[in-house]
Length: 199
Image (cartoon, rainbow, N blue to C red):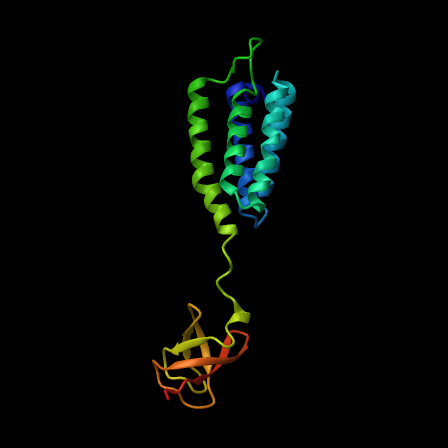
């Protein structure tokens, strides 16, 4: 336990706890990341309670969650992400200070970790936020009425390409491959089509 109370180790644990929490927010799913983040943040809370720390830096660090949550929902995601990133860097760097308000975490470690944080935010978090706003590609309701092309012969079964995707297809009449078709209806992932005849 004495090792955890080293400011350098405490700093690393705290930063990685926040990074896991951010990853859990950006990529929700199995609950594994959420669980790891909670455990690390609880350990961080214990460490902070045992060490002499800067309350102002802790407040700055916690307030950095607000622009991050805004980045999940707002349109100006990069601005909110930048504010959250600055809050995390400033808050974590000045969390453990001496009586003269100088950080007691080793400067080389601080610089290295801050570079990792910037890279993490720029590549992982930014891409995760961009992925959140992408519409699902499989728009089932929009397929009916669309125009596509048969990729195989279609009669009782076959396949067509429509709306940027391959679909299993059926038709009342035989339709050769490479013909334009209109989607009449959909049942699950199978569409019924009819050939568009050139006039």
